[in-house]
Structures are given as C-alpha cells and as structure tokens.
Image 1: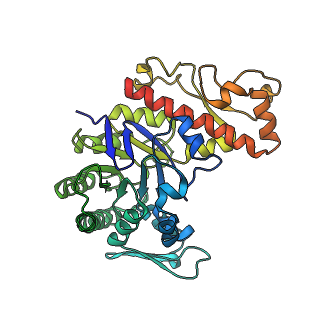
Image 2: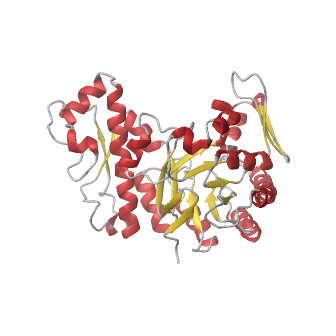
Image 3: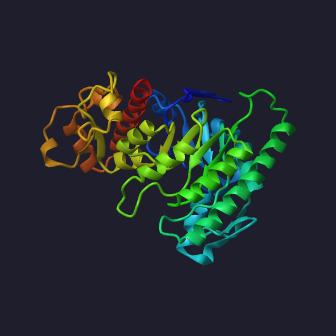
Length: 368
C-alpha cells in the first residue's frame, strides 16, 4: 500500500507532493507567505550551493534553514552530488570524484570544497533538514557502461557511509522518536541499465533507508521521459516507501510518474517557466476528478505564452478555474503588460500561478 504522508520534524508532508526548488534558501520571486498561500507543503534546498553561499556556519548562526528562510514546513535537502558532478564534467580542472567523495572548486572560489558522504550528512543535519539525501555518484545518460558500473559501486559505498554517519548523529542527539529525527533517503543509480538499477536498488534496500530517489537524468537524448526505466525502478522498491523522482517537474511528467507510483517531485521548471512567461493551464477543474490525467490524456494540459499578441487586450484570467491570487485579481492583458515592461511584479504573480497550479495538481492526483 502506497504511503499517503510523511511525518517529519516540521510537520506532515502529504503525498504525492511537488517541492519547488529553493536552491539557496528561497524560491525566486516569492516569499514564504506566498508559498504557503499557494498550498505548497515543502521545499527542496541544495547542499552544494548552501555550503558556499551563505556558508554552513552562517546558516547555523541564522538558526538553520527553517528560521533563516521563514519557512516552517518540511524542507528536503539534496546532497549536492549532482551539482558537483556537473561542475566537474564541464571541466576536469574544477575537481575530481574519488572513492572518498567529491573535491571541487566552483568558479571564482578561493578554495576547494570537499564533500564526503559523512560531510554531506553532517551539513544536512546541521541545516535542520527534514529529509536528507545520501551522496550519490551521478552519471550522464550517454556515459559508458563502465562509468555506470563505477557510479553504482560508489553510490552503494557512499550510501553505506552516509547511513553510518546518520545513525551516529541521531544517537548523539538522542532523537529517539520517529518524528523527531529527519528521514534518510538513498538514491538509485544505474543509468539505462536494468541490471545496474537492480543491483543498486537491492543493495540500498538491504542497507535500509526511509525512502529512495530515482537518480540520474530522467530524460533521454530527445528530452522524452524515460518511462520504462522509471517504471522498472518503481517496481524494485516496495510500495511502503516514498520514492522521489528527482528533477521531474513538468506537469505531464509528474502526472505520468504519479501513475507509476512515484510520490515526491522537485524541479525549478515551474518557477523558471513562470518568470519567462510560460504559464500553466488546463481546461479541467482540478478540484474535481482527474482520472483522465492519470490515464495520460494529451489534452488535459497546455502552456499559455503571455507574450502572445492575442492577450494584449484580454480581460480573462490566466485560467478560469484557478483560485490563485493572480487569477482572482489580474487579467491576461495586464500580466502581458507587466511582462513586456520587465516589471518584477510579473515574476511574482506568474510564479504564484504556476506554483498554485502544481499544488492543486498534486491534490487532485492524490484524490484520483
């Protein structure tokens, strides 16, 4: 039976859920009050970026991520492994991956940073995270089988070290009750190889984690969702565990993965789309039944490009059935005017709409 929620130190996180990316402790263009009004239940923040800006000691001095950001609800922190890997892949001079962890120097940084499995868990614990991601060795979709095999070996070894450090810290802090301690998720790697995905999943399940993430780029070379591999990984993880589809945020992809059994999603896509004038719409009333969304109907979702000239004098809201602040108050014509004027108010109002759309979508998918 699938989980309906996660009970975390900073509240209950209903499942399925979409977690906007608050990379540096904030979702661009909106504040914590806006997020709460949109119905957002949790955020994802990034260890790789936070350890650099504002820096881990500053995060702790400001009371941890929740107090620093004014966000009282659950926060998931990713390990930073993907970002460090991407930096190194762009230029080998930026650092190296070893069996001990990741050594990297971000552009313009005065010193190198070392991210070991133990350090990764220590940082996330010190931030006050509700869900901690193990450090994993991410690969590119086009990497060779040899590189994928090495990635799986490292991911398993690092997960073992992450869990040992996590248990040491939990015991040291005397977090005896389940809702007092954060959850620890392992990340399943293996690229496009079913054998490697199975090897990684079975090893992580044997180690025992609170939940699991689908690691690696979820799109193929043509930017299509790798549905078969996502479904296969879901089949490897028992239904009693939360499964996080890391980096998936396109509404249609979220609906597809929810139908497969994934329960957690995060991406910067909805907020980035909003700032660039690509707004989300559906002819459906998301407060009603949405079984045709889960069935994969192609007509349920569309983009509204606010830059289109046909909206110059439009008095319609972005979406008739949407209850967000933007749709209740402002017209398409006014929003287009703000967009063409490069007014910062547009970014806030557009972001509110796309995030409310995602929150209502998750509520609907949870009912379906």
